[in-house]
Length: 170
Image 1 (cartoon, rainbow, N blue to C red):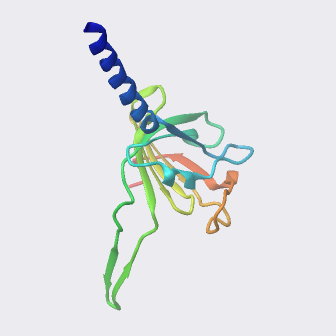
Image 2 (cartoon, helix red, strand yellow):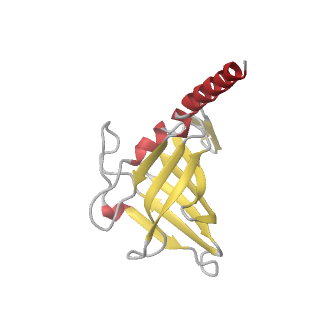
Image 3 (cartoon, helix red, strand yellow):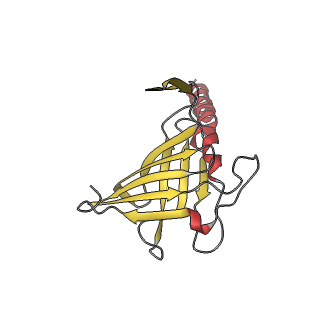
């Protein structure tokens, strides 16, 4: 009798683990390095809401500074169609903004850090990193020819990162 309930409990645990395994999978994307390209950032749009993403080679500051990795989780979904309505002197215009994937998380090994990243359907990325009292902004331009389907490699000139200077950036 005990072995029967133990088997049922073990079977339920194994089934639960099998169902959760795909949800715990992590997508890894490399940002451009000083030499060579990186991963096509548009792949981030395939990460489901709540899904995990690791960004590698995230620069914090000027070129030549050590890079970091960030563990992120997607916080938005594309299940609703956003509508942008602009009212101006020339009338009202309505458009559907490009799909974007928004992620939040922290730098690997730095649990007190905060990272927010937004990646659009063209492969451009904008990010903000708070590390202690320091704040960094990161910008990756969309790769050339990103309007066509397929995989594009980012050029190294596309990556920009700098520390925010609160006295002069206001």
